[in-house]
Amino acid sequence: MSRVAGRHVLGGPVYEVRPGRWDEGKRAAAAQLDQLEPGWHVMYGVWSRRFYAIAAWCSEPLIVDARDAVDLRAQMREAELGAMPSQPGAGPSTGSRQPWAA
Image (cartoon, rainbow, N blue to C red; front, side):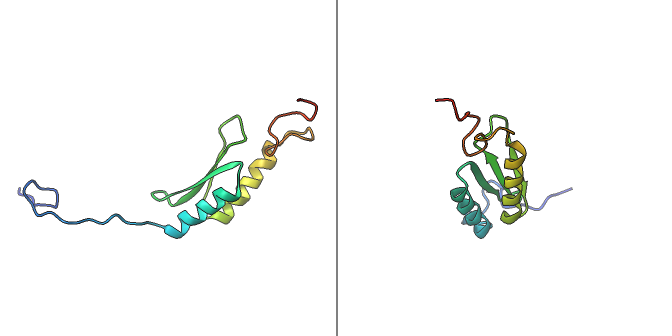
């Protein structure tokens, strides 16, 4: 059984390969959302084609993902509400610091 030579054969012709810029619009949307949400690190996975957000304000790992930026932002708000303690003055914006703590 013989194989047909492919592009990665020693001594074969050399081709110029230009790097592709995949999903530029979605990557730009993730970068913009990352700037708008200081308590989160937002990124877009080109391979998975999903948006990811990692909470910077949470002591435990908290990652949400979605197929689009609008859904991701909704999940981020939901995660913030779910992680908010019942005590006033503590939450994603102020962390776990109590109002009376210096």
